[in-house]
Amino acid sequence: MSFQSELLGSVWHTTSIERYRGIMKVGYILSEPAIPDSERWKSGRGMEFYPYVRTLGGISLFDFREFDAQAYCEKYPFSSWYTFVPFRKDWGVSVWIEIDTSILADDFVSGSVLLEQWKNKKTYRHTIMPKIEAASMGPIPLKAFKRVLRCSEEKTEFEVFVDEQLA
Image 1 (spheres, one colour):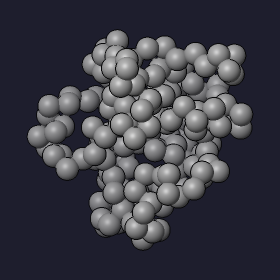
Image 2 (cartoon, rainbow, N blue to C red):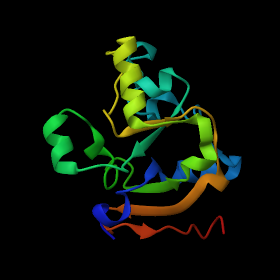
Image 3 (spheres, one colour):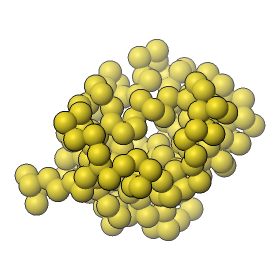
């Protein structure tokens, strides 16, 4: 299963296997999980430079519903989306959770709306992946999970993820 055939057309959250297991134990994806800042995306320079969604208290999602990789890279050459797709090299394995945004209801903020808010507030020191970074402004319950996939260096194609330790 390739990026094109699996992630396109949907909204996703990506995480490591260890963090996925924590999500399953808690029963939600949380905006501030019990992990150190040193392990969080772009937290090294302190709160003044946290990613935009984190400053809002939200959970970052990838909104690939209307995504064309080539056009996106031409328009936003400094976006760091490729750090996550198909997997984060520093994790070795990425778990991708497809999210049913209808369950999130009003907590879901699309990539386009989020980018507009970021521009209007002029919060430019807080990073954002234009148009494709969406957010949930509340915890994401397990019932919002449609599918769980994984990708790694060993298996560079996406595969359905079943964690036997949690089954």
